[in-house]
Image 1 (cartoon, rainbow, N blue to C red):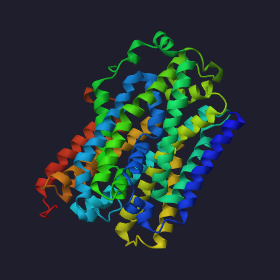
Image 2 (tube, rainbow, N blue to C red):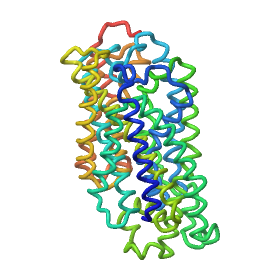
Image 3 (cartoon, rainbow, N blue to C red):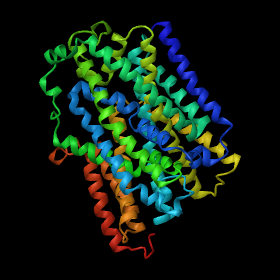
Image 4 (cartoon, helix red, strand yellow):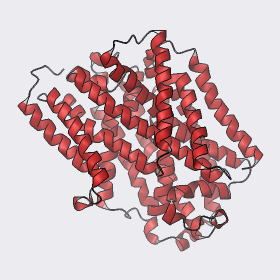
Length: 480
């Protein structure tokens, strides 16, 4: 990378650290650190939501899908649109319309209200583990992008650099810094894609004529996808909008229901079609470039058989001129950091409030709590960095983390809000069995019936045990 590009990129990284430092002494307790003071605008929240959801994992992952599947890969984020809008209609009124959650900090506090503290504890553990894995996927995305862009940079070194920046400014700034930086990062990403990445890449590979001549026609079709893949994405991504700790933190950060709904509708539109088609288009351009031998000088002749997710970084490294490379790298790292910081905050909130808070009373307004939260965030970030060093595929790691949370938490939260007969025993059984079934099938079963994913069976098992145990062991409590 040219020194001009490197200077632009380093300045961007320093600016992100500056954001964290700016808010370091302006956070006055858990209200600021974990829920942004509860007075954020719909624009900041909406952009933060989409920046978090369509971050590095989806940006790099979508590039890989575009490389392999073509534009049909965009259907993955269509499920994000559905999830966002369904949550706006079905979830947000239940949360913002209940005064019991006016001072809530975490998602498992919903379970504590409707069920028991023990159910909330298990939910906190599941959420913390899932978001630690999700943070790892974003750090890995950043490392792979850096490795594919910077000459002579190995993956482990890239992991340390990317992970350190994300963790440090998140530790310092908390959610308020995260939301404001997400807004800036999203703007950088959009400008980078619209004005730099897509037009230059399109021209470099030879335009539509070259694309049509080079790739299989199926890659230009919206039907190059199996129904099993559609089901997998739907049952993995749509429910996360109902159980995602990052999303609940932003619901709490809105001052009223109208603001939250507006933010979620905005986020859905940015997911699909905006980001969906731009992401897979760049992956498709990388496919064309690889077929034309543009990556041969990198020793990447067989990229399709090795790691399609590296196609996008190689494309940008190959076609972007001096100066614009630094801008585009900053844009993609914006996407990566905007998700990594949010997931790290989510895992930290779960550990401090839901897990440690179960065993010991915590004072959310004290300086000691704030410092303890920062230390916890740092330790979780270090753990996420370690997990990232053991994985190779961004999209797999991200979707595994989604599946782990969804299979255990989705059915009980829907039951809590919409089924009066739901019980604590049912919720506990559903969380444990749903997550266990998904993990066991993922680890020990290479092929499942009808070609479906393990998460389908995990959610099904969670539903059956939730209904059965709730009817057998009712709470006898008024669920309001």
